[in-house]
Amino acid sequence: MSKVASIARLRDGGTTWALGALAGDHAALAHLGGLLLQRWAPGDRLVVLGNMLGAAGNTPRLIDLMLLLRRRLLARPGAEVEDFVFLRGAQEEMWHKVLQLQFALSPLDVLDWMLSRGLSAVIEAYGYSIAEGRIACRNGPLAIARWTTGLRERQTQQPGHGDLLNALSRAALSADGRVVFAANGVDPGRPLAKQADAFWWNTQTDAQLDAALAKAEDGGWPPIVRVVRGAGPARNAAQETGRILTVARDRPAAVALDADGAMIERLEA
Image 1 (cartoon, one colour):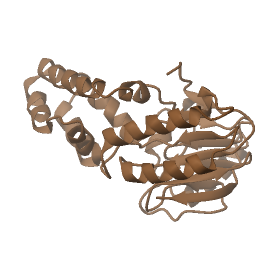
Image 2 (image 1 turned 135 degrees about the vertical axis):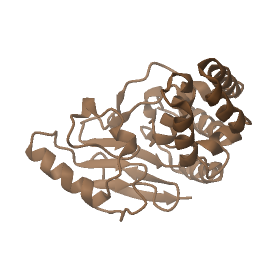
Image 3 (image 1 turned 30 degrees about the horizontal axis):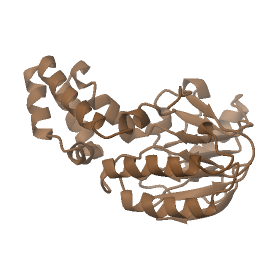
Image 4 (image 1 turned 135 degrees about the horizontal axis):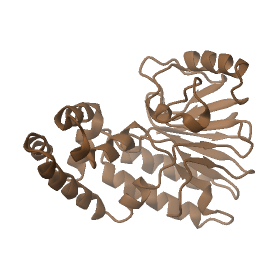
């Protein structure tokens, strides 16, 4: 894949499809991908809102299906490489962190924390041993490096997986910059360019984030008409017409958006 922008900028024109929080659910992607193929029109774009990996299905199979969907849509008339944007979510961040586990100050604590948040299913789906990883954490950096090298090799054996997971943007903006796409939200207390990991660790509900954005605009934040995020916290009460649009609720979903971020259609798995 070509060089990836930290914050991607979408082309103007057409419908933007936002696909949210698959969490490893390959069956959901197969269903939603089929619906997208039926509805895709010249000039359309796809933003995958992070958290592709997860415990809801088979992650390697999901990545295979995602790559296949991208190829099929790229073959459509008028499609361009930059029309397909993949964002980093908390699950992808943990995957990158586990591959660098030998550099952690408390590797076993870090590993256990990530395992309890869905990473265990991803590692097991690639056919690798979690128990050996925990043992390596007790035996020092060299042992951990051998374990993470093996895990990376398992990923490399799956064509295209490493390329996709190393080509993730932090967020995306509409052509006019008024719609923000992120895995879990934004931190209105920071400029967009300095969000760091706030794009994928946000825990505010739709209402809380909407209120925070309103105050931030009074303080000079850019005029954002909508934040489209893949998922919100478990306690979230999703808004249909507010400034915050959470795509996945109790299941993975895709939404079609116009240039102003207004929802045209919702597809659910």
